[in-house]
Image (cartoon, rainbow over all chains, first blue to last red; front, top):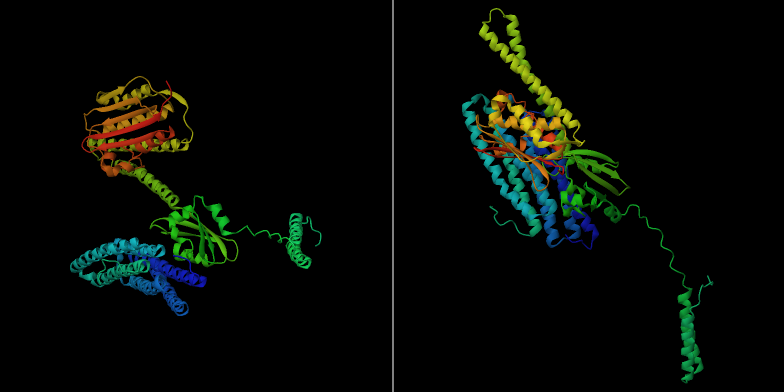
Length: 222
Length: 392
């Protein structure tokens, strides 16, 4: 991006983007740790994830304030305005991603008898795919790379396919092992949360594409 | 102040000449005087102006341009941060994190919470971060604070070190497992024999004793393989200097390992003599391991070809070819790893220790050579060793 004649504006935008990146870094770590806690049954790790969400929320409101301030004081135009609007929306979505991680972490203690509960092992690969999407979309945001953003959108299919197969697996597992139904139901919610994380990463990717090029990606299905 | 080093004589002469010319041209004396006054006055003003004060020496110690030049070609990624913005990223950093990061907030590049925590501190420090750029990598980040605004960040990739540590632990775990397995069966059979010795029928006792013997032999060969592996590893930086007739050595070692009953399966294709600098004992072991593998894993009764020649690059090229079921391509890159087995059951049954090819690889490396393995499933496998030869 070209430098602005008003240096203060440049500084504001840089700070705004830095805040988003910081939020993203926290959300990324939260996803990974929430899943690790879920799979290993680590309550302390889960508590850490839940606590981290407060920080993410605080950062979101900081982004909100700064974005509104920029719009009010500097009246940005064209790509600058796109940048600020996108940052505003992305912050909201990243905050949602953090919420889903928190939600997963909260369910850690609801799974009983982890060692015998086989479907748990299915989550690892799905979680990895989703957290990779989040990682890539944040990298795309940092480099304003519309190509990488489109790749992230394409990879959402993989997470959806994981979700469907886990759903089928868990349902048939419930039929065979009625004693574990409550744990299995929790697991379905967790899978659902991961699937939503993937969807939200797609949303961010669309906004990254928008901020970089001014149009939404062509194959968007609204 | 008045002490002028040199009057501007040329200008003064020019002025006077011009005035004389004007006078000659018939202008009034007063006018000419006025003109010359203005002229000389302006010359005086220019000359009287003091020289521009000498520029104060610039504080060059910490400008970001100079730092950029300094670190540009450093091997590890280095960033210079000013007011939490990246002002300098050297070549390695640009390659790792992308060109876009210059001028951006540092958090765009290193958004991991641990990194941000490090940046928010006032003091220098370091942190270790897993999954900074790619998922499984491990980076150590050093931050050096220069002054209130500037700090330098150096990134060190520790992924491979962590991998090596991991491999080392793996090796110890594997080795103790391999050593314990034969011991367990020896102890088991000996206990049975000593507790209920007389009641065991003779033929069964014979079988027990045979198993004990074979397991003890396996243990012995495992221990000697481990010893030679660690010895070769310890010497791997000393290049061997003994002039050796490689052809003769190959023939002798191959026959020795084949023994009388398998010698007929060996086909030699060795022309002339090839001399190399080598360690005879280790080279013998290399040939023994390769030929023994070929005889063991090739189809029983099929030929094993041992060929030695000198290639154009003046390398002694030894190839051992068996005819058998071959090795699946996915195993090939791992064959020289310690205790790696394509088929654990069969390898143990034939008395393999899982260290043979690891030893071969280390010997080849010590001789500054190369080991290539190519295999076609259903056809067989070719092991090729190239070692620099001496001029005959």
